[in-house]
Amino acid sequence: MDEATLRERLAVYLVADPEATSRPLLDDVQAALDGGATCVQLRAKRLDGYDLWRLATTMKFLCAQFGALFFVNDRLDVALAAGADGVHLGTSDLPPDVARTLTPPGFLIGFSPKTLDDVTATARLGADYAGLGPVFPTGSKADAQSPIGLDGLRAQVAACRVPTVGIGGITIANAPEVIGAGADGVAVISAILGTEDPAAATEALAREVNTALAAR
Amino acid sequence: MDEATLRERLAVYLVADPEATSRPLLDDVQAALDGGATCVQLRAKRLDGYDLWRLATTMKFLCAQFGALFFVNDRLDVALAAGADGVHLGTSDLPPDVARTLTPPGFLIGFSPKTLDDVTATARLGADYAGLGPVFPTGSKADAQSPIGLDGLRAQVAACRVPTVGIGGITIANAPEVIGAGADGVAVISAILGTEDPAAATEALAREVNTALAAR
Image (cartoon, rainbow over all chains, first blue to last red; front, side):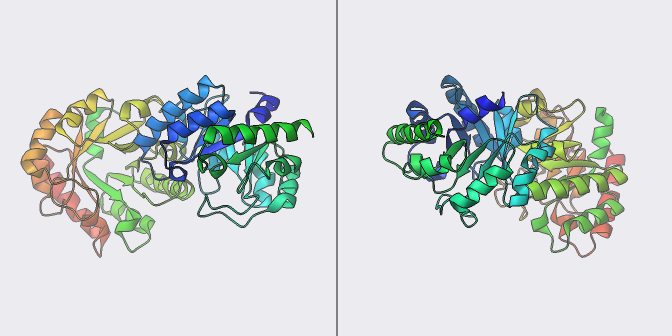
């Protein structure tokens, strides 16, 4: 996938965590795709490999119907077995360059750098895009660091030679500022999964993101 | 690896779980290899991918120096990244036939079937060997089923068309019975990691296993 296409597909990025919704996760993902999500990452830390693989396989199928990218968090083996478009890795997972030795051509690797040094290293490690944050305070991730803020995001985007999404505490209200700071997309959990109508929430989020992208 | 060689290398099989020892795990693995362990499986459910990969890489290096096989439990990606000889999968992990689509030639897949149906399916699923048990009551695995006993083991070995190791509550004292029931090896945790002198414990276990194998 060329970089321009990847940037486009990162615009409205749902991190699908079964612990963040009281509904069946696949229903929420379907709704988000209906609403215009361009990318979905399955993050389910408590699922065993078997259950994760089953869920990922269905979710990949669903995403493909909408032309959305599909990533699996952390588990490269499950991502590969499910035919995902890529894996998303953090600093406590397999390093991107090590993961790359196991992946077929075109398989995407996302990376969440922690420090500014990690951000600079992202491209060198062979990651295709970076998740930068937490931009704002967030309740969705128990082990989140302190927020980097919009200025921190702007600095990290500038230091990062691959496409980026902002993540952490992003809402429909503040999404335009995240795009304004240079991110190619916004990654959200509760802004979609934590709402009564995930399709409508995604649609509203997508509208804000696209308007902000068009205004850059 | 031909099947006869695999059977030999399964004889004295340490499941290396950091939660089962108060010492540094690598010290215990080194001691077990000194004492004659022929196979080591790293099982560390609480470690993140990064730490597991680092530990697995070192453990593989250590095992290779002794000509011992090295497996990683559950995480096929980590097993591949660490250059392990194989992965060991349970019924809640990636299925062996799915895992096989991601592995290079010669990479070994172990499987722990739960039911007699699973045992029969082991070879069909493409697993190279099976871990059968728990043979006896065990305290090392929180989610263990009720013991199958020596008669159950004998029945499962007979139904299994690949090499087998017995696992669960195996000690130096009862190891000969496990081999007598037809298993090619004994997989132990506390019989080595739970002792004051893991090298001496492994040596004593290896002696019993080899005597019982020679007497078949």
